[in-house]
Length: 191
Image (tube, rainbow, N blue to C red; front, side, top):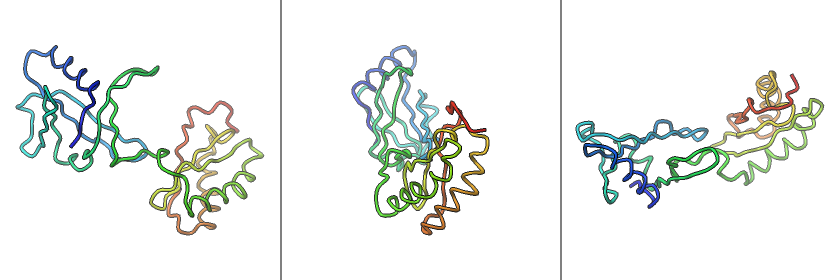
């Protein structure tokens, strides 16, 4: 069952107080990708509930979870957060761990780090770039490009024809390599 922290409950109750009719909170998983999990929280009328929705009571309000999201939200916690970027609900979900919050350690990760350190980074250093291992999950390597590679117009080619080949030749159990770099934030791309 998904739970709401006291702070999140207080904000839901405040939102519901502004409404003239009784509403419930609907929460569902829109995208369970570990690269960018997305959730939707909305207020719904009782007539908008589906027959297979799961209903949970959270004190003064009901939480409606569509059947497709029930297993993905088991043990999840909804909190209210305030930061410099703004305020809003945050879902902490043990079933969907975003890339980068996992561990970049272990025998396979250590071998990938060594290949990056000894072969990949020396090859791209002349362009002012470097690569960092973010995580290895399910035999997929998640990398972040930095320096001259971040925002470079040739980053996808460097990944596909250079980095991918080098890592997969040296660590054959890896089945894919994914670039999780925010290339829009690059300040000094090589190209």
